[in-house]
Every structure is written in structure tokens, then in C-alpha cells.
Image (tube, rainbow, N blue to C red; front, side, top):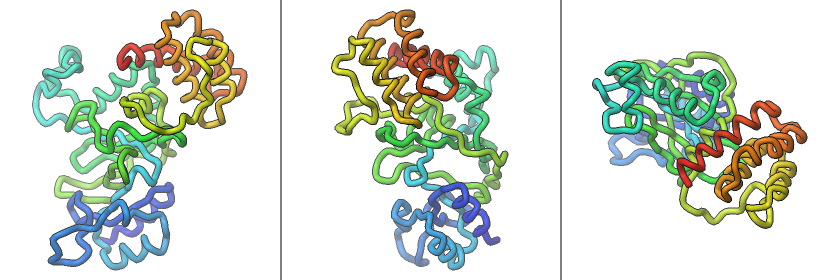
Length: 296
């Protein structure tokens, strides 16, 4: 079995890849008998020559996809390992409506909708069915946003896990074409990798203070609605939705009623050509207020 074609397909999507042990999830042992594996974060590459060399030497290697250098956020939804696996979690109530077996995608959909997201949009991205019949949802992590809470965080550990961009290299996943003892990883579609929805980015962002420059122009004081509007109006393309989310959370933290900021911030977002116009802006602002209540 030669997996070089799958490694090259991953590269064609912009992914940085590295070899993983055949039928395993652990990085490849470059020299047989050595008691260590390669430093996968250093080995992960987009360079065509290196990729060809890797799989020419180890053609049976699975395809590791490194999330941070690939600017990826991957949500790993698994099938339940036992009945009532959500018992004792904040999602236990899903068993009342969905029964004793609730899979990771059900939880992911619930989180999406509870935070004001569109499940149809979240679902419409590149997806890979895993060897254990779970699903990897691939998203692009936005530029200019600081590292996620963890490279391997969990919404529900073992059921909905996240591979993201914290730490030195971030986490990694097995790409399409890889095969483990549980089965093959198969691309479910040929869709593009969708930008990560704002609610998901905010859910994954690090909560403690970080010493990095904000990608947004911030107002002199949070309490100034005009300053928050300026934040949205001066946001760069690609950061407008995140800027709107930040501004709405700042307004919420300052005690401003949502009805006072919904119109002005949505108008500012739409005026500068924010994707989705007023409708998307209002959804983002409502999501920001829910998130601020959850994390503030």
C-alpha cells in the first residue's frame, strides 16, 4: 500500500503533512530499533520534495496533518463508547431527547446551535470519516487571532475533541487515506475547508490574558459605543466578523443592553461589506452576548 497520493492530495489542500506509522496514529520511527519517533512538528512540511522523499522511503506511512502550520482547527467527533456517556456533563440532557447513545456530531450540533451558529454552515465543510466511524470537521483558523486554549482540548473528552493551534506546533490528525486497525479514513466530500465560524473560534480561544497585540483597532474606552463602532468599521477584510464579535463582547461586559448595540454595530458591519450583511452581524452579536454571559 502506497499512500503518497493521499499525502499529495493533502498538500494540494494546503496542509502540512508528515509520516505516521502504518496502521497507527503515532509519528513514524525513522530508523527501526530506535526508541523514539520523529519530532512531527519539525517534520511536518508543505515542501513537495520532502513529501515525496518521505513516502518514497516509507510508502506505507499514514498521513499526519499538522494543524498549526496548516492554519487548521479540526473538530473530532467520535461515536459513543458506552450508553449515557454524557452523564455528569452539561450535555446530559441530550439523552432525554436522543436516547442513551449520543454521538459527537449530535453534541457538536447542539453546541453550534446553542451559541447562535448555523449548523448547515458548520456542516458544509471538508469532512473526513475516521477509522472508528467518527468524523473530522476541518476549518480554517483565522489569521491574526491568538492561539487556542489547547492543542488538544475537549468539549466532551473522547467524544468531541479539538485539534487546534496552541503550543509550539498545535495538534495533529490523520488525513484521508490513512488506515488504522479500526479502519480507513475516508474523505466524505470534496468541499473546501470552511473558515471557522466565529462562535467556534471564540469557544476555542485562550481564556487567560495573553501578551499579544490585538488584531483589531480598539477604542480608547470600552464604554464608548462610537469607539466600538469604529473598531468594526476599521477592521481589515478577513477579521471583520471577529472584530464585530470582540466589540459586541466588550459592549456586553460594559453592561450595554443588546438592544442598544444590535442596530448600530450591525449597521457598521454591513456598511463595510461584512460577509452576510445585517443577518450575519445580528447572529454574531447575539452569539457574543451569549458567550460573554458564559465566560465573563
